[in-house]
Image 1 (cartoon, helix red, strand yellow):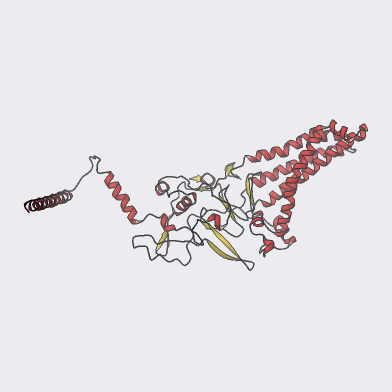
Image 2 (cartoon, helix red, strand yellow):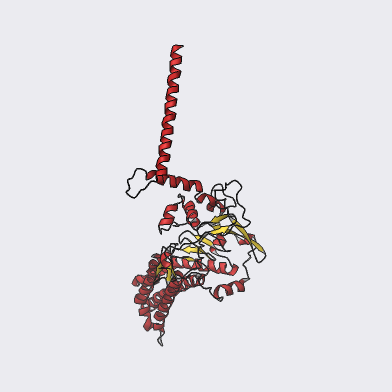
Length: 432
């Protein structure tokens, strides 16, 4: 038995025994922590410390306490964003049953009938028809607003985007913390930027000098002003953009892909309803229990579908098709290897997810199943490969030896009669 996180098929990184779930680029979190903590440390040492005595009634110490509290809160939000399940949809053990299944009439009695799943399905959401797509990697139809992340190799509910700065997908279960993280970073930038100018103003008033000479006396303030000004355009612009997305109940993926201003958004509940849903609704529980013990190599029985069946190894064969490899049936049966590595695209578009000849059907699943003729060839090959070996335990019955001798004699008699016939023919031709 293994913990679920140890047998996980995605590209996630787990810490603390599966309690923390990160993306494969989790190391980028260290850079983000440095970009937040380093400017705050410089501000506390070179600016806030010298402003303590400039404000009466201990207001000076509150400047340092406030910036430290903002920085710590921002880092906590960073961990809550990047260290939790963003809404990963568990993979299916086998493809779903095809609706209105009918076996192919072209296949013979000894062959598996062709199983073809529709590439898309139409579902109704608030009176609007939404087309959902089949994911070959996870072997399921993605729920509305879901997408497959090519970096984490998971389908994520209400997928927004994969953020490299937090090293995690942003989805249904961590979008709230992500928005609070970038909002807090924006406030922190404005706070440090403003008090750096306050310190420069204090120098100008105390020494009766110009702004340029005052700025020369505090190079740390100049560096912080430039840094926070640049950072504000990134995190501040991102904050205002997501305020617009929350007000219209869109995700980043939907905004760039569907353009709801050109058609009806079935998820829009009004400005107040959208903000209430984002910040006040309860966060759904994770659908994955990463610490649960599962068998190392679970054996899944095939499921009957009409006159054919869905093989438990069908998922690995489909993954091989996506990766452009030949199905490794013997490896899937004899090893614990994981053939589902990384999805080739994060786009749900039909021109990227489908092959050149695919329209609305998934790949032909029957081509992934070994037919009876192929099995007979494998058995015949294994028998031929063992004919040249010596084995003391190989016992051949007398009936088989007699049959083999009879076949050899008949071949020799046939060969002899053929030789006599050819000799007589040559002699007649010579005499003529």
